[in-house]
Image (cartoon, rainbow, N blue to C red):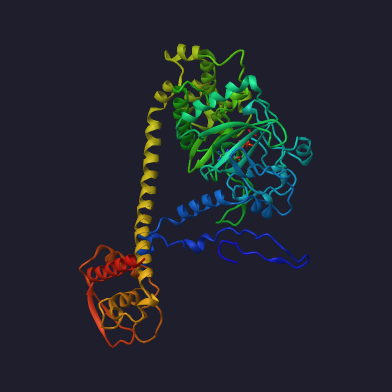
Length: 547
Ligand SMILES: Nc1ncnc2c1ncn2[C@@H]1O[C@H](COP(=O)(O)OP(=O)(O)OP(=O)(O)O)[C@@H](O)[C@H]1O
């Protein structure tokens, strides 16, 4: 089997060819972790300077893998296939893969496309009562699970409170028009009807919103592909994302303390810095949404996605606008203002839920605020109180309006912290990107040399004979790849930094000179990188002319 696990085998009991079993990438092989920077051997130093950090590499690999993982791999990993067949395509989308857990089989995959993990433990290894089926809470027993209606993807249909109580299904799918991966959110059994078709115009307005704090809405369409009336909303797919609910409210199994070797419960407390960061990001997103005359309407822990390191985005925008559309009473400026005020209130409740690690914290505001005051600063408590107050109370207490602009003014210094953190992170990413940029250049150079060297048609070309002008290219190739240790041991030199620094000097056409020795050690040439570069360029352009 190859490294990516694309190999397959036959089951001896049935002699039936089995589907290839997909193995996770062996990240440690593709990106060996380097020693700590301060201990780096000079040879590793060059390596370190040319490649992005192993953790970032692994993160990006995993995300790509989550995009590419196929429906068959999902069932393979779970063991028995329990999901009823999905429609193969819907509208212009194909290869549908359910992103929600299956009620009866092992819970295979989350949106991450990898086995769902809670606190790093694959959900297959956790008791079922600890598994999420929705943002509203945990279903605590198999009995409760079996009472829920079953979706076409085989999972229980938990009505989503954030989406007006309508049951929804979430699928990952590939668009046949642009080949990109999207998320299809199907509102099960919802018949929009002809008289409400204008509701879909609202989705067009969301399409125009480009905001880093909102999961992009692509389109919405009605469909009978699932054998019943449905409406499907299409969003950008964020591989490896999870919801704030899953991240902070799902209990995590105890972990082994590496120092004592004892099992320890995991501290779920959300640090204050993180609370401010979420608050700043969501407040800026609301400001953008409200500026466009829209309202998020679904701001709950289960509908805020954590899409990257500390990066939050509001999910499921536009759904409620369509589902609650009333042709007799179309949305007005007044109804929108109410929804916008509600967004701010819901943001306050969301913070209360995070602070008390309970999805029902909004049921007893006074007690939850009290609790928040005990664990967080007065400043944070004041902002949350502001969010939970009515517009009249804010006017009375602060003499200001209660809207998203005013909220951003309140957040002032914390927005600056957020900006700083985001700039630091973007510097870090840019640095990693520039390292890999160098590598692309070196790969091109290696490809060029690969095209030139050892071509059979050059076998009798006098230019490549030991007296010819291109002979130095093959000597240089030997110098790069086939050097052996001095002293007659014959041990091959596998020094990546030797290769990288020589290729760089070659690419730059440096005047530095090196000595190239023939394999029989009977002749040697002292040449500059500039001369070798010129020889390679000329050989390559000769080759291109004949190509
Ligand atoms: N745009 C997206 N990109 C990637 N994953 C997504 C996206 N939208 C949803 N998901 C994932 O799909 C899964 C189900 O999403 P959903 O919004 O239904 O959450 P939920 O926890 O089931 O909430 P609820 O009970 O309110 O329906 C979650 O794991 C979520 O991370």
